Length: 135
Image (cartoon, rainbow, N blue to C red; front, side):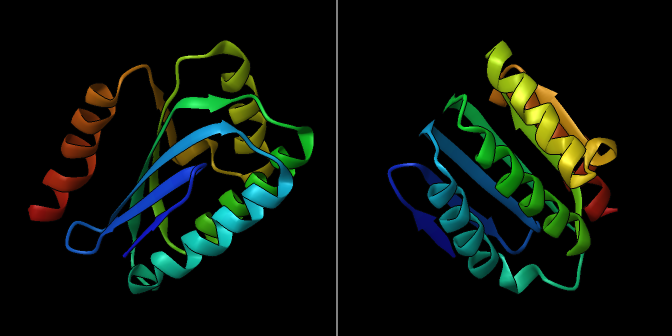
């Protein structure tokens, strides 16, 4: 399944149990809530088993504080529902700080990694998720 909006895209690869997300612009709480609803609906086939997420945040802008709370709860939901690895591509110091606040709120620091390029994140995903699933 896949969701698309002006603020984000969500693509689910059921075979590899990977969710790829691209985030755009400056979010408000309503956008973050809609993202969570779409995310839960799209990833439903992966519920009950481990999965990984890779999120491209290079087009995301620092958002309002309420977004930190909503996405923190989304990350906690993800942790409670099988996410085993969360990879984030980010290249902005301000958004990096906000992302780390979200990790804290969601309790996902241990399973989250950040990268400067999508290529680095994809290489890590391959080595630490895709290749291990094939063994």
